[in-house]
Image (cartoon, rainbow, N blue to C red; front, side, top):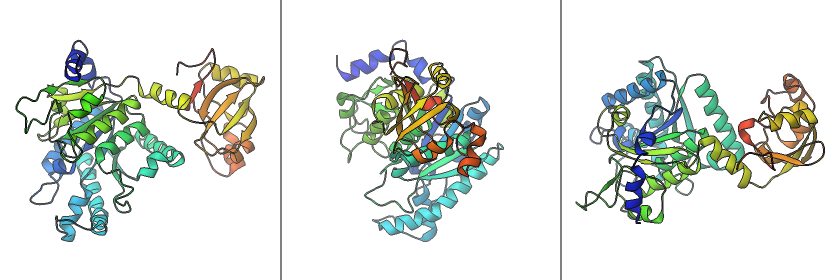
Length: 394
């Protein structure tokens, strides 16, 4: 059975479930420059943006948390600085981004203020998603903003990024943000309504695929090469984003953003391509913790903490009796009962030095001991997986 047949057969009886947003809890929407910025004037398409933010406000009213990954800063800054479109220097792009980011943030602020929603701007570099401590800091900031009701608007930090360290496209950035935020749904708004068996602009026989269960080599071949892939940003980068999202337990859609209210249109049944995720974000995260990292230390628990751990509760400093290793915040540590048997593994919220100072302490004492207020838990239940016979299924 070829990839096209696989994709077609996968839609039978499952397409409606995958394509529905009714069960979404945390959603990332990626917006490209070509949709947001008018080519001729170099200004924001305000009517289009307002309509999209109306969609976002509607999602929020239904209890769905929304993050926005937005391009457009460089395109907006070029116009204001008078930088030409033809082969601008890296320094000119960075300068344009510095100006355009202010314009972009202000536009989102004005548009969402019509609905009484607060906007927060976050600028990320690749290291913020790849280095564990910075990843945890950004993840905590995003989680806090969402808990306080804000809508984070995220972009690559183009003012300092160089050609060698850039994400290279906001499709992949959108997937990394979805991974970081444990989002369950990622929508890439594009100039095309999904994946086809070939470039539909060149091949009239190209067939649209409504659902893809997995990004196989056969599916990747449909996108063409990175230099010639169809859709803004290239279909190749969108499939790369789909693979990142799926590994994080996040389903993804490629949908057209050419018309106004693209998310409302998507919910109404507009054509798109959905990429299924094999697990939930939490399950995918726990699999990653269980099998993808090398432990940097160990914590020894008292009997009460061991029982709480086996009951799927977080590990508090009061239940820790020993700390071994030279780990840093965010590293993987093994968790052992009083008898020394490993009970689980988790990402620790404190480095070894700080952890040693707060063992046996109540959470309310952490600030007085360390001089700052950290997390109440030394390992949060979302950041740990049980091992052994009584453990979680990895």
